[in-house]
Length: 477
Image (cartoon, rainbow, N blue to C red; front, side, top):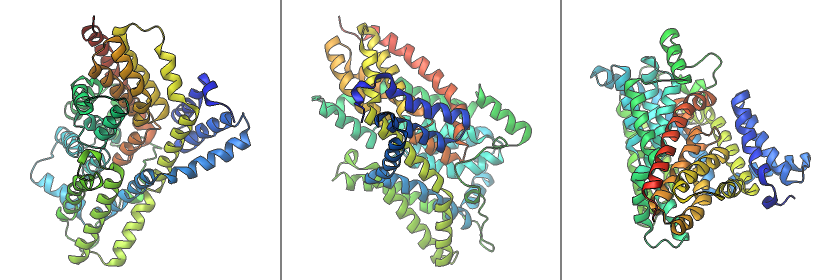
């Protein structure tokens, strides 16, 4: 086996290969596995067969982590919520309720609804976009708004809002990283970083502008012209992450659509989340397990839905079982995509991709430029590895000592790392949050990445300039 510490630039090659192939070929599954295979081939002394065997083993090992397994299961169970809500008439009932009362009559009101719903559930970054996507996707289709725009709005509210309101697993994780660095007041440090996290703030604001005022450019503008001129919410040949059969479940014959058939299960999920975070955190919401809490909240929502439908005589037990299996089966490809995303992240850890990138950027920096450099390095690391959490774990032990040594405001240094990791995760096609946004909108994953990237880069550019400016303002004498 090759020594990861001696790989240097080679440690960056596998994730870049996966990203490049995914964008070029639009074959995400094969591209991800190619990156995994390349990583383990390099680590196996360039033996392709040994690399293949190690790649398969790494994919299997993803399920050794209970939190990851629950996230994968959660993702496929969302399919059951989709089929339940449609077959029971809940989705049709809610859409009818909104439109009959004139609450969603225009592109602007539909965009604001998607933005607001995704932001309501701030205790867990995955559930908000999934719920918002399930409710607003039919409205977007009816009002001729592209799936690419919906996925962008959802993705821009997924992790950014969780950093702006860190009373969640994001906050608990980051505070834990501070504790390992012997920070005296870790919660206060995180609080000081929130208003300086320019990328998160600007991403949420930009999503609102795009949702409400239709300020489009680049590939997103092309997608919007397509849907307006041709009535196509997706381009010809697009492959949405949710299978068509999960999107086109008709209301059961004879059933009267009722919004409560969707609202009650969704409210159950949203209400259960903070309670389960409190339970799994032994009385501390911020110490709770996001993956465990989300898994059980969705499972509870499915149980309430099944009981409600059978109690109202809408569905029989056999129909509930059939709809559950149909929904889970439709989202199995999404589960596979998450498995591969986790596996390539593990390969990057084995190759020490993140530490190499961080070390390469440390030399020769003046103190005022350090916050901007931390943002850029964290962004590139997260883009290459597909994980903001992993990037923060790599960069925090670098940022906090550097801030102390160079007399940089610690909140500014931490915010730069958090914002940079968020940007890279937001822009990367191998990020699990990007995959979840594509799933929630039922958009083609690569189309989502290509239309979102110009916005992410523009916001990152503004954020980088702000870190340069604030670096000169907030660096000690």
